[in-house]
Image (cartoon, rainbow, N blue to C red; front, side):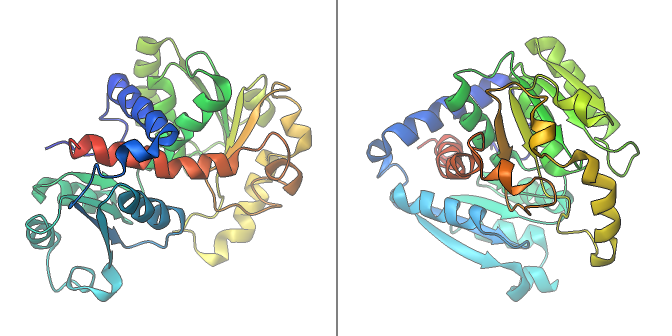
Length: 309
């Protein structure tokens, strides 16, 4: 049984297959309008969602299938009255594919261990592979390639999006540069950096981590940022985090160090005045809504591939 748990487990060839399929799905959606006929997607949500729920549910519907929304806060699984293993083994008898948006990555691994249908990681505290597949699709649409491009990430380096971007980018031959405050609370995990150095050596890409935002963004083809306030951040830490990350805010002055034709990305939600200014995210270099749209197409491709549809 194949799952999408993290891009760490997917080969560059597997990523390329999904990106090519996503491109075809986007160009000719009618071709896939019955590809998931009589198939059912179970959508398990522990975390809040806008893009994830809408894109998965719309995607399944547009391919002739059906999606069930399952909120763990009102379920036996969420209340602890039923184990994850019992829940997914039961669900596997009814449905064809599971996607889960959870807090703990370990819970997703447990789902994949016991499910007898494909499991898709729609976000955990460790990884966000669906977002990065959509991101890679958007970059390729705008730049006609991935290999050889410099992708600069500015802000919180110790999070699921950063780590997933590093995996996906280095596997596809990109030069991934991360600019984040020094220290274990803000920089990418050492094991992720080590893994990405190996992927980059094989693909012709590179990975670079620095606490200097100018050094990170210099000559970048793609500039990427993400929220400084992940769902797990306590309210009382917000002011301190804003002060810590403000030097990494993507504003016009910092964007000027990137290539003139650089594109700007944020996986959303975005806070104008924090991780980026309004002039950047609402400006001509921003592709944030193209990026968001591709969640639909990339996830369709993932479901089609995992379900052999």
